[in-house]
Length: 377
Length: 179
Image 1 (tube, rainbow over the protein chains, first blue to last red):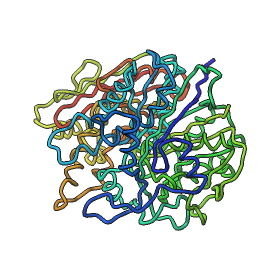
Image 2 (image 1 turned 45 degrees about the vertical axis):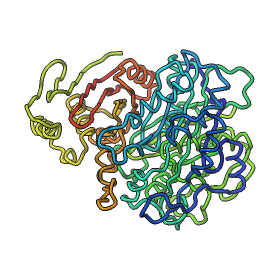
Image 3 (image 1 turned 135 degrees about the horizontal axis):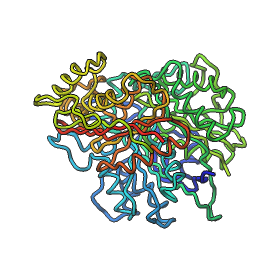
Image 4 (image 1 turned 180 degrees about the horizontal axis):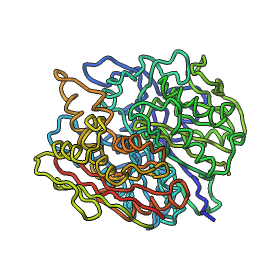
């Protein structure tokens, strides 16, 4: 019998708030972090979900003595601190960091690599600050990193390597990332509209998110979600474009649901990837239909938070657990008219619903896909 | 767990199961990779579009995976420098406003897991993938992670390894694991 593994606590730092309850309230009101910003000098303003740096700094000063941290590190510290304070860090506590680009902004105009751009250094700096006793693990699998980090924690705990784990995910908006997605002509000129006929591309976002995962419940938990199954399967099709057949996502969902022993009709809610590029949205529609999940209420959080790269999967997992705890499905923001060739049950308005089984998915460059199944306990 | 077929690539040498199968005296990794590709008769033109990290991982995987069926072989890789070799080159293309030429063909390689995607495409491996960043090669960690994949039944084999490259400093240590 494999150990059961639970998510029992979480926190997040986003443009909509520096804790989960402020985020949840903003989402209920339909507020979005996606606003037109001028981020890069000499370039036109564009829509992005950006954390106000002054607000971030003020919040940081409230909780930390002024120390030498990058903007992204401050976001990480703020999301982790309330969680870490509530638990004992032991020799069996894992620290798992997931990020796509970490402190990549430090690379600008450098002739050699600054220490801070190494992801293992970033993780060690955070680990040392909080006093973690194990060596940090960094998961860097493009835009599935956040979902995958949950799976890594579950699997390593089940394998008996750790008793509990702190998982943190984060990415910030940088010129590096913006210019890259721009070179792909993937960035929309308006707020993104996942699955909508009039979509015209993605918005980039930034956030950090942290969850606490354990195999040992104490009965003091405010909530707990069992991680029932996971999988991350490659499309083996193209490094920068999603598969037309949705093979990798389909197989990831199938494997995760098989491990979870949960059938399609039992899934109550899908928190999908929904980047609002036609290729991604279409690929997801194909994969969900192949799994006969087209009736299940589904949303994309990208209209609220933009695409926060490696952080998106963990942030969206947290919001989906909040949805289950509040018994409320959040609308897939900016979706109006069906813009995919196969049916999906996209949530148009917030609604009350009983949510027990959640499917969370993500897909990314390199042909990677990930799926996890969570059960509200 | 059983460890079969081990490939090491460093110092302009490819060693498979203790036997040097290719070596040359070229100065740069790019030239070394190109010569190795020719010598191993790989015949896969996409190779030339890859960044150096992908070339390194691809070469090490190629000599182990050969033409066998790998539809149930997972990929678990790690390194220290992530994709910083390509990140650095990409950053140079956007450092100055006068010389601002971001290229999508370069940008796509600014992710460490792209090399895993390249190997998956070559061998049509629709299988479990993971890429970790560690400050040093940690065989125990990679084996632990691979073992739980094997035990869960999600794969029959795991191609596992360390693929580290930054500029002219590189090392691959890749091996196949089964229960």
